Length: 636
Image 1 (cartoon, rainbow, N blue to C red):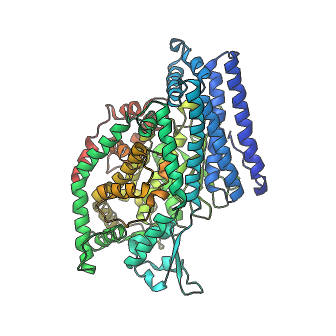
Image 2: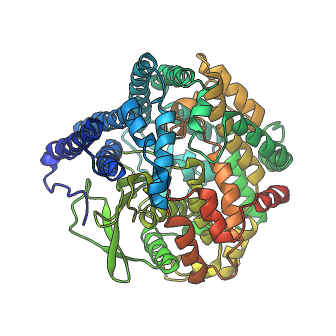
Image 3: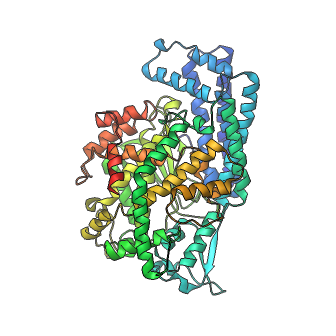
């Protein structure tokens, strides 16, 4: 059974969404009122009823606010998401409910129920339920502002449309199918947008450096100045929340439910990784500068709009990896089916297309997920860009799954081209599908607090399963299952070998860029500056080894500042865990399903039922280690 039954009539969406959210929130409020009145027979069980209702009330409007084709529905969905999130926050700040949960004798509970109790007590403390009435009242107002500002920040990025107009001869270097997809307008110019299918091939292949520069500026500036004031106010409100909770900064608030112990530890982790990766990053940029001087003998730097282009030039000229040649084997339709078939094999699932399933847009494909013939989930694949849609790549819950209630439903929200893909697109596809599999595999829970990829779980682990699934992009036996050209010929083993050999090329530079994002995310919330532009530029200069373009305000379109807040370090933290988990697999036999099914059972299925470190230890047979990650950094 599902918890959502989408309308088939587009005009009915607003009524449907309003009823979906309101009915669940009203039901949850009724249960919570009964708990406060002392009429509950089983406090945790009845709490769980309200919790699941609130979870489902939050999830659907959150995704529809990012993807529904009707702007009015998107706006309503955003408002309903804020309403549902406010109900959850008010619940978690409720001193009476806090006392009620704290008063439960843990010795009378099952292990899972006792774990839920402990998690709930942490949630209450994180939202200030232990504070006095005045502080809790102010915190409620602050939380409302944080939610509204976060929503506005995301909406401004989603709705920002940016492009450049250039003469067709400036497309030199791009493949013919890309050129054909960008016809010349009446004014004799071609439009290149900042959407992924336009931007990524252009930055990799366009010979015209000035055109690449213009596209980077358009991309970075697209949510500026709209988001400048929004972010400044968001940082101030988050800092005020930290003050009310008695914590040094919002980085400490954000790490309360993380593997990372506190905010200061974020900075130490970033510095440790920077120390290890910096020498490789400097070598990488020097290698790119050497190649750039073949085109521009007087060049003295490598800019943000040079880096990807010259990485691809060196790969093609010296490492045997031509991006255009690789694209010929990566047709989107074949890749999609290949990823479905691969993950079905690895994790013991089957994916069955449901052609008539109602969903929010005709582009979306719906698949039922089955295991041994039993229906265990549903996925929605919304894979191509369109106006008004989320402009990044992500996995969104549609409805978290619960045993004997409803199967988990989740969606990929991506922006891939409809034709030929780049190899980076393939890696990203696997990454996001890793999140999707995690959501489905963890979607058989009893307790709401244990579900899926909740923002209340250890969020700095959440990227590890998706990063590990990227490993399957780099081996010929996997790729040759679906990577075929127009004649049906599989990608040559020699080309895959070249891809593998070039895999870590300039990863030192890439790690430096990730650390710039991580430090920005952390320090914005540690220092909460009001004049963000010079603050952000100083951090970029400290960590990024490329020359940046001044006054481009990229932070205004840094969407992870809402959901990850101070914790973008998560990507490197999770990568260290992913590298360790991958040591259990045989790189020469990645289609061995015995290991991958054990991984699913020990790491993915538990969801938030146990700490991430415990799940990883159960899979590894030992506590997790950073040794594999450190060895990788040292090898760059």
